[in-house]
Image (cartoon, rainbow, N blue to C red; front, side, top):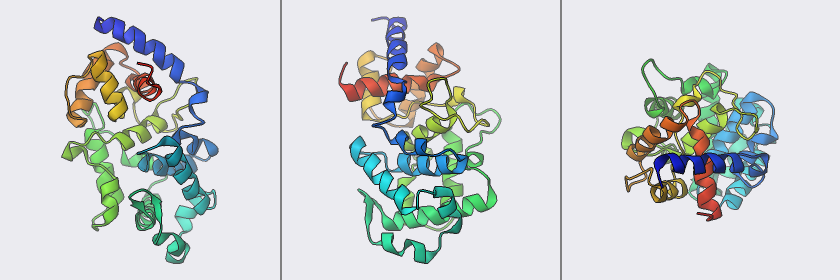
Length: 254
């Protein structure tokens, strides 16, 4: 199959999977419960942070997080105190993401919102940057702060060659916007043309089967290799192909 034919196929599948029906069973259903910008980004950040493993389990764990925050994530973050987090510290929130990790995330977010109105400001691109390689690392440094904590392992580092799948997914949710209404597009300071595919086992394996990714490791170098191909076919909205690649992988259609 010629590369152009591959992308004709992917365009068709992106149109099929980028649909409101996609929301219900996906972690993106969590932020879709809210209308306030900060509620959306906080709930989306937690949902994407724990997005590994079974999707049903991810959604269930994220629902518990939202419930613990009284279904008001922004208000909870702004006003949380040590005593408010005592009940969760000793619990496992989702797999290796512990109550202690959750507690530290809350206080890190509290610090963020004391200085910024939105998490978007921590991901801004500098002049000349054409992907989020450096921006993700700047976010990581700002969000985690100087204190070493076990929660650091839940925020991946592009500088360590991570594909940063969960952060790229979070960015797609916040930055992409179209008439389908799946992604939110509430971060308008960030250009969607510089988004990348949230590379995981599904999207990477399908990309290799289609011949648009050669690298065997699922790392940042693979992200950039895939970027170079997908941006040829949709320079303004390359992350649209995440729907096609992920959908094909999950559905086992291809």
